[in-house]
Image (tube, rainbow over all chains, first blue to last red; front, side):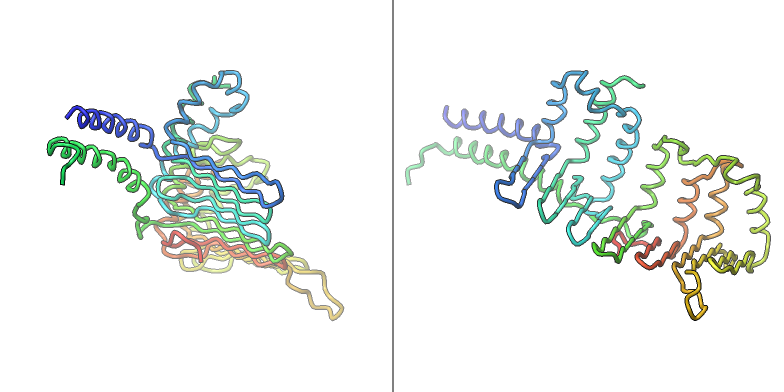
Length: 144
Length: 209
């Protein structure tokens, strides 16, 4: 009986931890370079972690990286909110003899796919995470 | 069978297992989603370059989204969904008066210019403003000019009205988009040149052909 209670306790904790961590979905980054010694990067991280990580970035470094955050924050926020209404839609597609680029929503994620002769890059970020990140960046960077 | 755990313990463990599956089902719900409403109006842009790379660009934008996103852009002359026109650009032409004149006039051809380099035609027809521009090459040996590019623009008059509804020095893009959404499937812009074609059109599909 003690073992069962222990199992239930562990499982419940795991459930809540998993629900909390994955409630926003996952951020996925895949980079594959098609040449000898080319990089192969595959990152699959819970989206909830991104705003947490951002909190550890020093203000001055954040400011350098997001110089015009205030200018673009309202646009990105509206865009992220509106894009949720159009799941599984390709908004921009560019294709030529060497490259194929797609910007689309897949479910509630914004996905950018670049397929080239030399490399393939796929980035998928939950729209809610984009919103959280932009809000946090705008809060922490002074308006110019 | 001699179970390792008594019945209540097994029940608890099944419950725990079920709980573990909850996040998985939640995650799967977030990835499955419905497609957009069929009544939605979409603006499509397709650019096809026929050069060596054969580049094709497709842009699909729901008008409703564009209406909400545009006011959030505050850059250069674009502010709250309106574009400011510099007076020097229109060189003293009263666009509003010009538009009023066109609106109150009957259908017909207003401007026809036939030159050696360009043919221009501006007309009003069945509630649409039509602008056709044909750019020509300099005459060939046989003396006949060859068509270099052709631009055809077809804009509903209501959209033109909405565009100029903001004031003398502004174009109201959001009002124009709103007026555009009331229209049926329409080919708005078509450009054909030697090395590229451009199409801008409106329909209710969320993909371009």
